[in-house]
Amino acid sequence: MTQGVSGTGQHSEKTSVALNSVYAAVAVTVLKIGVGISTGSLGILSEAAHSGLDLVAAAITYISVRVSDRPADAIHQYGHGKVENVSAFIETGLLLITCIWIVYEAIKRLFFHAVHIEPSVLAFAVMGVSIAVDVWRSRTLKRAADTYDSQALLADALHFSTDVWSSSVVILGLLLVDVGHTYNVPWLIKADPVAALIVACLVVYVSWKLARQTIDALLDAAPVGIRTQIIAEIAKVNGVLGVERVRIRRGGSKYFADVSVAMSRTVTFQKSEQVANEVAAEVRQLLPGADVVVNATSRASMTESLFDRIRAVATRHNLNVHDISVQDTNGSIHVEQHVELDEQLSLRDAHDRVTRLEGEIRVEIPEIGSILTHIESEPATIETADDVATNSAYESTVQAVATTFPEVIDAHELVFKRVGGKLYLSLHCTMMDDLALATVHDIQTALETRIRRELPDVSRVLIHPEPQTDNRR
Image (cartoon, rainbow, N blue to C red; front, side, top):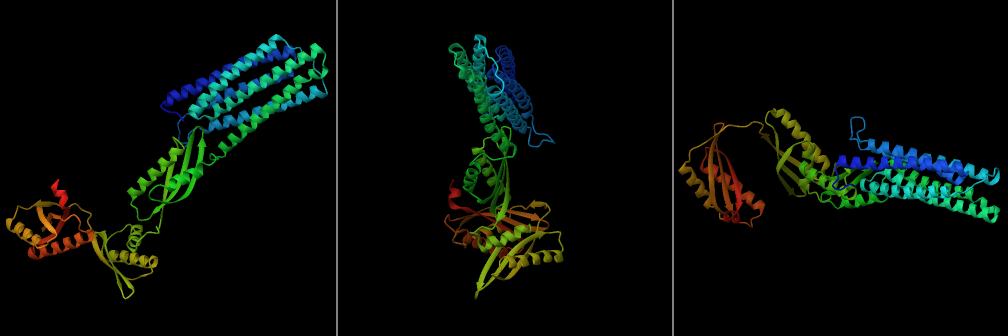
């Protein structure tokens, strides 16, 4: 993958490398055709045909890399990267066509129609130049292919690296033919078509290798072993209960991953988003730059408590349940809970919703014998509040009540407000650090009750508990 290269710079370098390959293919093809005709060498003519198809392949590669980097649009929503895979597939077809022609001509010259070959210094020189050019462009293309993970450029690089070996075989064939003429060894004269057959074998090998890569890419085959690695890494993410699906496809140099994971049905939307982001990050560790889509499905966790199961049913109904109390009376489970509903609902509608909720809870948690639900109105309007002037008598009463609780160290920041004609009180209470939260809640409830008993005109009391160490900072 590219590192620190802008999209424009990447596109420019890829097209430049592909265009240079086209220029080189034109020059080499013209030279081979001229020398092949002058010498009558099937080996050189087969190389000329091979180079001619190389030229077509290089041109296709050049066009494909220009198109493949275009961004996704309304029609091509996964981008244009598949153009590179199509280009590589076409190259495979061209290589096979070359192979068929070479085999046909070689068999004809070996068994049916002898052709006189006159090796020349020019022939050796042209093949030497061809080898040098192929070495240069195969290395250049391979470097660019590795840098930008381009299958089209990689296909060209493999193509031209094979040309180096096929050209070397042709040179060897010409040398053997020349030796046969010089020392009057008839069977060596057949070395040229034999060399052509060896070239055909090399072409078949490369064609098969390219065909497997391009067909896999076009059929969206995942890299070998990568799916197993992704599943193993995702399963380690905290909050993932299971990996249900991993699908990977490739378009050009870019990977697309579709992942479905199971999470506890009790997690919040924000938490599920955090887990999904961690899952996507793990996938990109293995497939850098991948476009990852994570789908989260809910599942009952093996560690769910009865309270969690009740909340899960309520969440499915988009209801807020709190203050759940569960009692076991002679083996019968009784549940008490508070449910908040829209304050605009009528009592009948609210009761119907709660009845449906209770019925579903009993179905999903059959061990529950009875349920009692306290219906509360969920505020949906912003109320106007007026600060009430400090009342020293009221403050003294609150402080006196607080001192009767040994766990309460002090009460401070007392604020009285008038809301909708009712008097509200809020205050902070410092308590001992090691108190259990359940104990803190009980103390708050008892303190609120005592304050409202001493000050009957206070409609609501809200207490914010603070640890003792917090007030020492």
